[in-house]
Amino acid sequence: MRDSFCTERHGEKVHKLYKYLYWDENIPEKKKDRIKWRLKVAKRDMPCYVLAVNEGSDQLDIYHSFVLLQPYFRKSSKFIVGIAADYEGAVEVLRRIVEECYEKNRDADLKKYLAERAE
Image (tube, rainbow, N blue to C red; front, side):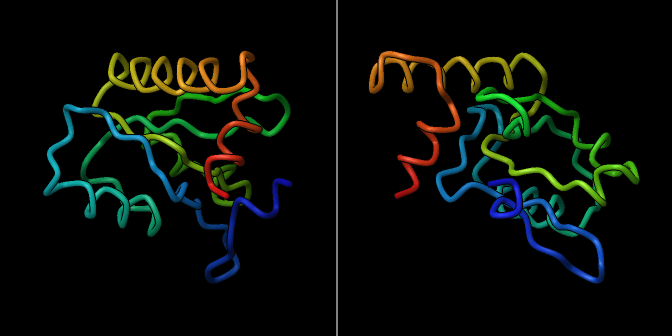
C-alpha cells in the first residue's frame, strides 16, 4: 500500500498529495497552489504543518514541513492528506478528519476512510 502513495523524481521519492486535500482555514486560497508545489519540489519558503498517512497504523502523523527536507524523508516519502498554517491548525484539521471518519464508519480507521473517500 505504501508504494501507491508516492512517486519518484530524479531518484528521490516525491511526496504525494491526497486528491481531496484537507486545508486549515488560516491558509489563504491564493497561497494553496504555491504550498502544494513547494512540498512537491522540496523547497520550503512557506513553513507549514502537514498531516501524513502513518506507514504502520491507521492513523495520521503531523510534521513541520521543514522536517520533510531531511534526507530520510527524501528516501521515504509521505502521502500528505492535510496542510495547516500552524500546529494548532493541524490538530484542528486532524479533528475534522476523525469526526468525518467516525460519522461515516463508526470507527477511527483513517486510512480506510480516506481510501474510500478517494474512490
